[in-house]
Amino acid sequence: VGGSGLDDFVRVRKSDLEKLTTEVMQLRDFLPRVLNGDLIETLHEARTEQLAQEQEQLRQECLHLQSRLGAVQTECQKEREEKLLLREQLWQSGAELQQQADFCSDLGSAACSLLVSPSISVCADGFVGSLDDDANTLAEDHNPDHQFVLAWLEPLLVNVAAVACGRDFLSCLARDLLDSLMKLLELMSPGVFPKLKVLMLMALYNVSISVKGLKCLSENPGLLPLILTLLDDGDWEVCLHSLRLLQSVLMEEEVLLLLGSSLLDPDLRARVSGLTSSERPSLRLAAQQTLEDLLALQQGPQSKRMHSKP
Image (tube, rainbow, N blue to C red):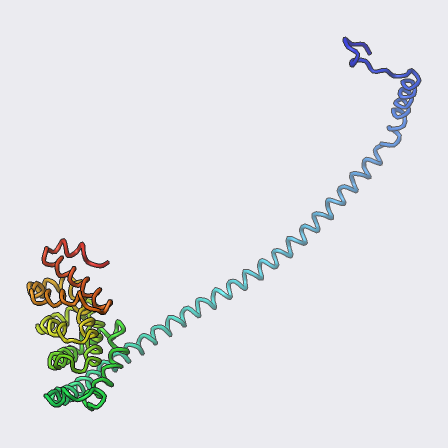
């Protein structure tokens, strides 16, 4: 083989070339006798049989999967029907439970109306009657009327006024009770029975959390005069909870419109301002926040909204 460079040549011995030529000639003669039609047909048949076996295996696997799919679908349909049945039972149970709850609520409201009004009336009459000069000097722990009111008020605060449905009940069906609480607070002298006053104020504050309850309290004309008096009680906890009740009033625009200029009373602002120098941190902070709200209210509604809490 010739070429333009040394790399274009391949050196082969003549004997090797003759040997390779001989082998090629022998293969040319031998292959037709080996690769005849019978061999090719045998290979084709073997391949066909192998493919048939593979197809049968795949068909069996497919049938098995279809069988499993059918079983799963049947089970799924059964579970779906059971789920629908359970949902229906749950709905019926919920409806029955709601009916029972409504019945119990109505029954409880009726019972409370029957029990609370007479009891608070009797309790208030007896307790108010004890608020004379001698009673004011009697310790809380030794005043039986005070103990009765305290024992009655604590479950009221915890079990009724602290939950939404209880607040709705008090604001809608027990207004006389709220008026009685404010009347008791008004009649008790400064510094007397501070624990009882705090519980009463906490109950009133919990009622004021709802707009409906706050409107109910605000419709009593004695609310702000009562707060003004309690801010000068002398007991720091009474003052603190009076401020919290006042803050609740200042947060609702409809109540602000209802109370009008009475919230701009200089005496109210002066008493709140005086509490900003309290040694009690919580009372001092509450007084500062309330004073800011009162000053914002004095400057106008827009300023009040800017200072209101979210």
